Image 1 (cartoon, rainbow, N blue to C red):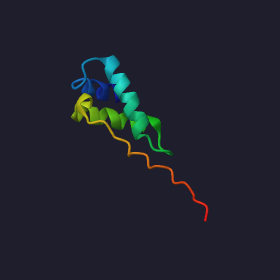
Image 2 (image 1 turned 90 degrees about the horizontal axis):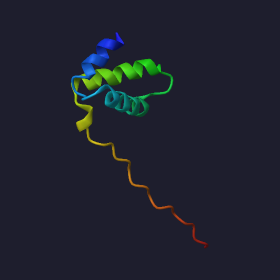
Image 3 (image 1 turned 90 degrees about the vertical axis):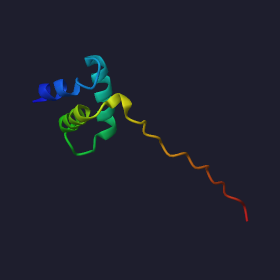
Image 4 (image 1 turned 135 degrees about the vertical axis):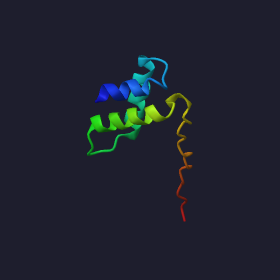
Length: 73
């Protein structure tokens, strides 16, 4: 049940508000098209149960490549 997942995740997060904020951000990042949002949320809560989400490294986006300009021949 989801309540068991929430209480398990609270062992690593200081309060419920923070858990809700972190879970919503993680669910948006991990959600795959054509899958149920509920399943993704449950997966996030399972991950939070085993690790502390506040200490996870931030995902860095690759640096943008400069736009190439065309030269006249």
